Image (cartoon, rainbow, N blue to C red; front, side, top):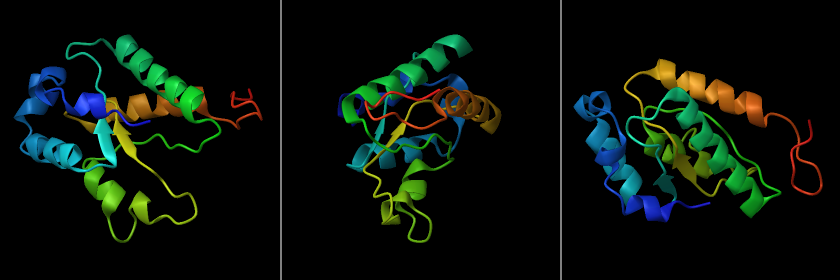
Amino acid sequence: MRSTACKQVDWRLYVTDEVLMQPRSEECFMKIIKDPCLGFCLPPKKALPGTILKHVYKFVDDLLKLKSPCIFKVGFSHDPERRFRNSKYGYINDNFHQWESMEVLYAGADSTSASFIEAAAIQKFKGDLAMDGTLKQ
């Protein structure tokens, strides 16, 4: 699911001042905007943790409704473009899974918040898909 509509939005309106002050934020988001396989769909700027998780869960739920059956990963990266395009370990070079895209659903100034979101999303969506595209519990 491509969030191309989000690329039309100024990402600065959706990240905290802490993220804005990070020296690489501008560079990272510019690489996402320029890459047709990368996108972002961020929660509101001052979202509380529960709202951030609801945002992530809704995005993945919508992805599953649109693309099921599908394979997806949940993770975090300090440089999404590099993670997707790297010649050694980039997802784009995985001929087995043939990843189409990467979507950034949250941007934080530290890895702790991202790792909690990652863990919560993995916990929620772990498991196998049933034949009808729903998650088996």
